[in-house]
Length: 417
Image 1 (cartoon, one colour):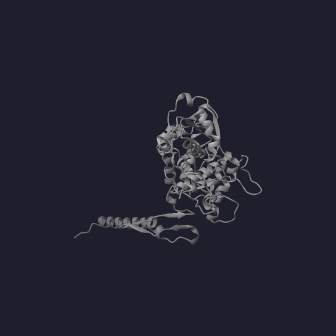
Image 2: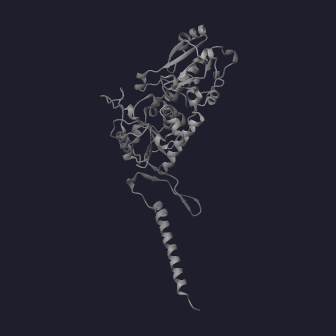
Image 3: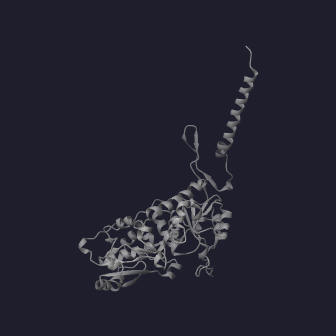
């Protein structure tokens, strides 16, 4: 029987190609999983698990001081209730001001006062600045239905109070942040009984915030109002969720984790944020980059910065962590016109606030009410991995855990068990 030499050669070449292909697959996809890592790499691999016959799955790779997220904290409060006859015909009006980090406290105060007086709470507006055109309706930022549902049985909330009241001149009463029940009888109740309707304005003690002093909340109404009533309205929440999803997809080597850093260049030079004899108050981009590197975060870590627009000083972070982004880079293009133009600049504060609550780790570059507010939200979510840069030569991440967490000094701890 004659042998066709061309067929023999074709068979040899085909066999050789299969061998080469097998070697390439082994080299590129199998060997790296089986190759031992150097002890100094700082990378830890979980045990390889076989999920299906013939398939090897690397379950998780961890670079740096990541911790598993705790379960969401359980609220210590029980939802109170009222009887209809306890409700008066009077209204309590208030506005949400300054920024999202102040809003939960303002709502807690309003609920406290309305509950004590048996008054109806008018759905607040939101002041984004000093100009009238910078005012927004509550539903443009937050979910009004969620707000009203969360407070059902606590206080009555009216979406549409009488125009002659909401547009008229009301007596104004200033009250301290986290107002106590003892304050209301002598300072608010007489005015309310006389006028039947009034507006409350919460003032915040800036010196107490600077020192990190936080009093506990006095009752369950405040806890419920502060940690259960606010949720972004649907479209804005979708934007935040999309941005979080983008960061997680970009951080595949980190198992989908990312670090959120409150770093705004314009804040670093403000009064009260300079270096003092006793402590360094603020940390710039270069120092934040070195800090993250020092406590063990790998160069492939994805970092989110609250800065709006890229500033050249931020290159110092990106030089250490190439996967560093601001909201401008990861916000869906079709949403930028609505949420990032000059006219709607204040939406960015809400986006940053909620991005920082969702980060797997959070680092504040300077002390602020923003930092305090984010920590409170994260305590409720079980996201307690919060590091604060301080002057310290130690490279151990646990040396930099926020005192709000390490010492349980944040008022949110009085609301969650």
